[in-house]
Amino acid sequence: MAEEAKEVAAEAPAAPAPVAEAPKDESEKTAVAPPPAEEKPEEAKALVVVETPEPEPKKSSSGSHDRDVALAEVEKEKKLSFIRAWEDSEKTKAENKAQKKLSAIVAWENSKKAALEANLRKIEEQLEKKKAEYAEKMKNKVALLHKEAEEKRAMVEAKRGEELLKAEEMAAKYRATGQTPKKLLGCF
Image 1 (cartoon, one colour):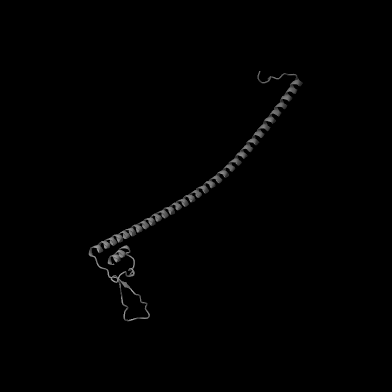
Image 2 (spheres, one colour):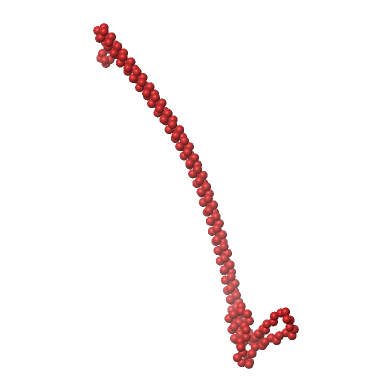
């Protein structure tokens, strides 16, 4: 009976005290604690089964050693679990920090791009305005040149008309007087 109780205790070290099995013999009966003499009606009372194990000096130390090894293993697992949780937390913090910095960089880049694009549009507008002004100036210059050319053409036409009239008058004069001109065609 004592060996069975130790085996049950070794199998379930964290389990509560096992309930006594039904006795097989008269010699394996378990002792039941007698109820106390004073009874208090307000408190609930429970019967407790008490077994009297026979101590074995050598085997109890090996069970204690196994329990110590198991407890050490549980403690080691607990530490490793804590370390893994801490590592995951640190990795998550690092990821979040990096993500925050990356989003700040993207926002900075977008604002700088927007500023440069606005500046480019402003310069393009200024260039378009200057281009329109220069185009207007060029049109005005072309108009002035055309006007001057028309004036020169008119002067040339007028001079030609005068020279033709002069030549006709001189020819009429030479015909009337019968003289020949001193210059013939200007090249002889």
